[in-house]
Image 1: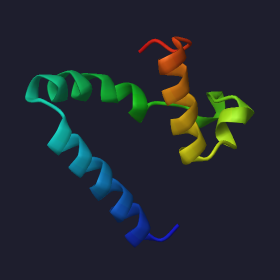
Image 2: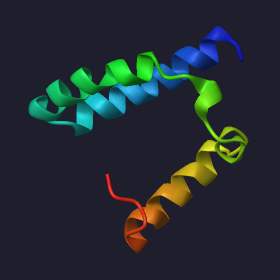
Image 3: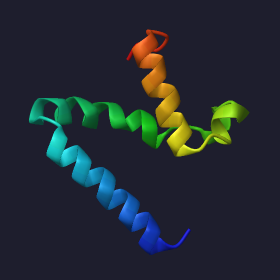
Amino acid sequence: MEQSEIDEILDHIGEKFHNNVSSLEKMIVRKRIAGLETFEIDSLPYSLRKCTVEYLIVIVKNGLIAGNLKL
């Protein structure tokens, strides 16, 4: 993946985060982000590693709606 594509993704995520999250929520998220920084990719099951982002979003949305996923 080229650096310009990586920058585009990071800009999009940053924009969504700053526009849609209250300052209190931002503070909580920043404290939790350390877990992502130390996250081991190899700990993911193979099914999740081969899953596309689009399908992962569908799975998560359906899991929340059905009550199978509680966040």
